[in-house]
Length: 261
Ligand SMILES: Nc1ncnc2c1ncn2[C@@H]1O[C@H](COP(=O)(O)OP(=O)(O)OP(=O)(O)O)[C@@H](O)[C@H]1O
Ligand SMILES: [Mg+2]
Picture (cartoon, rainbow, N blue to C red):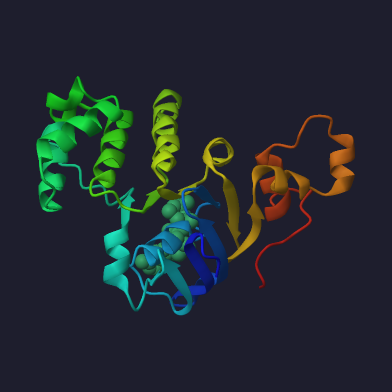
């Protein structure tokens, strides 16, 4: 496995009863990059994230996060990562600043107040910092959520659908914040159903479909995968959406069917 990989996944399998969700998933994420795991509803994105963040055991396969096995060295993995999404631990009756201080204290950091103030500034929440989270908009809440996940400087951050349910403006705010994460060398794995989000944020994009990764590359590489016959007649660059639909066989243009069933 590559020395620069922050996450590497080999042959990951997971079933729920007779529902085979992951049928041999392979991918690597280079340190300090943003990797988007793209897939339709029920493709298994959250399942993969839960396995990588040690919340769920795979049936087969191996996954390393910062060189620690998610199964055999779960504690080491937990020390290296943070997870935001449906497990967001934001407390509504506390202020944004109080939430940040609480997490900094839980992580035994010196000067929790300074940590909180630094993050409020960085996430454009200085004015909101003294208000109860219950009064925040969806975008402010999601920014606070991501800010909380940064406390203790995790090497790897998992963002499971970071912008689902947000309006376009709030989505842009979250994108800005996510882009900044990698500036410090943090590795980000995000899942999304929004092709545009993957297109905007990710260094590499992998499409999870039928239990396997059916495409994995930079946006340019994925665009080059579109069947040549189609490219010839398309004057503009193909969008990721066209590539996605083509590869997942969701339209008549599809050339691949994904899964093995
Ligand atoms: N705890 C569970 N028990 C049984 N089946 C589950 C469980 N969790 C997920 N599944 C099933 O596994 C499949 C993959 O679910 P998963 O949540 O990983 O998909 P997803 O790609 O994250 O979807 P979404 O885009 O809707 O979040 C779905 O068919 C789902 O119903
Ligand atoms: Mg999900």
